[in-house]
Amino acid sequence: MRNGWTLGSLFDGIGGFPLAAVREGIMPVWASEIEAVPVSITKRHFPDMRHLGDITKINGADIEPVDIISFGSPCQDLSISGKRAGLDGERSGLFIEALRVIKEMRSATNGSYPKRIVWENVLGAFSSNKGRDFQTVIQEIARVAVSGISIPRPSRKIKWLAAGAVVGDCFSLAWRCLDAQYWGLPQRRRRIFLVADFGTQCAGEILFKQESEKWNIEKGKNERSRIAENAGSGVKQYVVDIGYSTDRIQINPQLSVTLKANGGGNGANTGLYYLPVNSNDTVGCLCSRDSKGVSNQYVNDKKCICNDKYEIRRLTPLECERLQGFPDGWTEYGYDGKKISDNQRYKAIGNSVAIPCVQFVLLRMKKITPAHGGGGFL
Image (cartoon, helix red, strand yellow):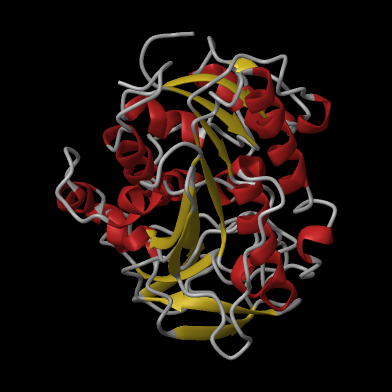
């Protein structure tokens, strides 16, 4: 076992959890992802991290034990923008596969590893299947520590709260909704972060205790403020006929709406912004699916200008990277040095995580250390 804290990332995407881990002094050891483009991007940035491939083919007893396992399991079947098939859906059902890997590792290490896990998902998990799916999530995670434990579901009138905890004699878990805009990013992105500790009762302390950390949220906000001018508040909307459909356009951006897999790529809620024209009258990009142009919205044959003060354009992949807290150009090239298409970049970035939020959670997991235990615990 390596010295210091270690992390394994399931449903890794483009390496959001490993990036946040490295920034907080945690070593990413392995990752599991099946999408070729995200894997190629992640290999470029973490060439020494082992890639395990399809989670359904992983045996947790055979891979290197780690202190923390992260898994932002596919959320399409839990999202209000999806079909709401819940945990019975083909993709969100992979949550059970993640727990299988975790249980196999703990069985092979006599309950020593992983010591903690962190699960990230959309807020739709609270309401999916009338709240039963989130009950399943916390109940099945608790059963990693205590077999057969039953956790009740709140009444339909009360519903699941945005923050809560479950504490047992030998384990604890807590969840909290974090919004990226309060962690220094100009994007309204609310996600559930759930932390479980399989040896102590400190999960709540990890997520809820308020204190100043070593990384400065306000500093990060100032550093990213340049993005706000191009990222969209989404409070006001402008409806424009673009020939084949009507899309909502974000006006005078200060704060972006939530990035999705198609955000920036094909309009919808997150892709099109109604922006002030700069001193050069430069027209920004409007590339994918715009062959019919924007009806009656031309000035001097320049596509996508609504008038002499405002233009319509999409977010660029670079802006989307910044909205998630990734370094510039993180998704621009793959492991083989070939450029990644804009559409693939939009999809990969939209499916990823807000890095400062993950850093907050991982730093707290590292900082709140149990008095006992071994391995990577300091």
